[in-house]
Length: 427
Image 1: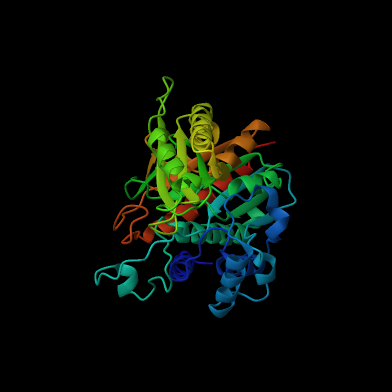
Image 2 (image 1 turned 60 degrees about the vertical axis):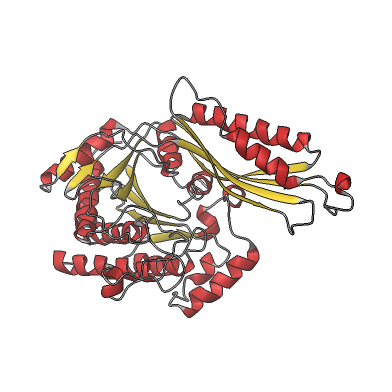
C-alpha cells in the first residue's frame, strides 16, 4: 500500500466515524466496521465478551438503550457480518498479528467512543462544509474518530510489512474511554496479560502540530460516582412532617463535598456535575441523584477524596433518615510511564522529522488507559502514553472541535516505526 493510498484511507475512515459517532459501550457500528477491516488485513480477532469482563463494565447503558442503539446501527451502515459480536454492548476488539518469529508482544491501545455533544452547525465548521458532520446528537469532540483510524492505519502497515517484523502485535480497540469506563473490563479479561510493551496514544491535548510527547505522566486518578437518595414523599402543606426529604440530603451532600480538605501530598479535585430531585412543587421530594467525580494526583490521594465523599453522602442520608446508594461508574489510575519505551517513540518521531519530547507532566485530565499501563508494568513490562500534536479548531469536548488530518498519517507511521524497533528487542 502506497503512502498516498494509506493517507486517503485514514481520512476516509476518520470522516466516516466522525459522521456516525457512538457513545461508550454503544460503538456497535464503529466496532463492526473496524472488525471487518482488520479481518480483511489478516488479523486474528477477539471480540465482545471474549475481551471484556462483564463484571467490570462501569456505567454501561441498560438493555433497553442498548437494543435501541443496535437498531440504529443496523440502519446506519453497520457491517452485519460482525454486528452480533457487539449487540449486547460489549464493543471491545483485540486484533492479533503473530509473525511466528521470536520476539516480544507489543500492544497498541486506541479508543473509539464519542461524546453526547451536539456538533456545531456554524457555516465555517469544516465537518459541515465537507459533508461529514455528525448525523445524530453525539459528536467526536475529543478525537477518538482519529484514534480509531490511526489504529487501522497502523494495522495496515503491520500487515503489509509482517515479513520484516518479529514477535506478536496486539491492537486494542477500546470502548467507553469517556468517563473512564472501558479499560478496566478489558484488563480484567486478560487482554494484556502477555504484553511486554504497550503504547496508548491521543491527539491534541494542547501539543502543537508536528510535535510528539512520548511520555505523558500528568493524568490524575479519578472516580466517577452516581449517588442516589431514597426518602418518603408527602404533601408539603398537609403533612410535611411525614416526609423524608431526599432533595435536602442531596443539597447538603453537594455543599459539603466541595468542603473536603485538600491533601498535602498532591493535587485533589471534586465536582458535583449534576443534581436531580423531586417531582412537584407541593411534594416533599422522595428521590434525588447526584453525579460526582473525584480526582487525585495519585491513586492514593484520589482514594482519600473518594472515601471522604462516601462518608459525606452517608452522613447526609443519616441526617434526613433516608436510604442512599453509591455506584462507581468510572475509574482511572495515576501512572508513571516507562522511559524505556517512551525513548523509542521519541526517536521515531525525530527520525520522521518531528519534534520529539520525551516527557510532559502538564495534563490535568484523567485516562483509563492507565489500567493497561499499570497491568503491563506490574508483570515486568513497559508502557507509555504518547500524544501526537495537531492543530485544533477548538478545544477538546467543544462543539467546534476538529483536527488537522495530516496528523493521521504521521501518527500511524510513527507508531509502526516504534513497533518495528521494539520487535527487534529480545524477550
